[in-house]
Image (cartoon, rainbow, N blue to C red):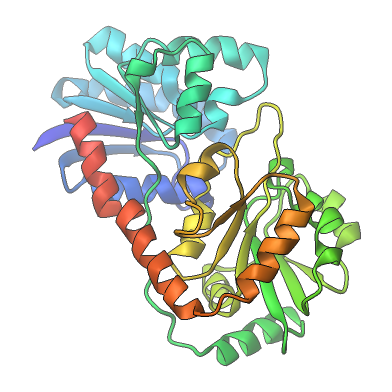
Length: 348
């Protein structure tokens, strides 16, 4: 086995989509390499000490390493120094925002280092396009989507899961069709747009559960009403029960300058559980959801199409057959075994 140094600034026990992906990627890499992990499992305010720590650690182990993998583009200065000083191959996982962040100093500084390392493993084709726009050679960009593990079925009936969520959060979901959105509440996620442009046009007896927190929370709260609920402090166990009772997963993203959706891991987390997904047809989402395969794509900010697709999804005649095919397709495209092999082909 060859030796690989994996450096990540977003890693458990801190919580988030990138943290989860980096942890699972690390697990897969250990099947192919002797992995030396250098990770920060705290909030991003600790970057000031993590940068010198990661570099100093590399001074002691780089001679033994065959290749270095960075968890995201922010770490590219460390990667460049390791490449320059020790002549090691350095690759970096690129998620989206780490190349599009709308700050001129960041764009000059980070992109300059990204251009000088050996390769960028981009989680979507849209992310590759964003790299190329910024002067990075397409030849050094590799498309490998995010991965996912097959989810085990929860040992509760829908009725039991519903009662658990109702009791914990003090809400009533009985006889409701349940739409959900899970994720950090940023403007690009489109939750505010969905609440103000789509929700009241849905005729079915639904409740829209918004699970998450973030910068858009204050703007969203005044529009939470009879057909919507904002849930916070949701545990991983709670999420399993929420997925178990959900009828449709909604991902209504909108375009925001400098803040792209690199992939859309929450969408395939829903899809692999057999929950029909309705998502905006844009950016990295197009590499996560394939129309009529593991969900449905609707043009962003098209309220009438969202309403229509929600109605059509409720009326799917053989829903269990659709769910079965959706799960099989998602596994085939995104299970970690396949994604790990793709990483190995590039890094070996």
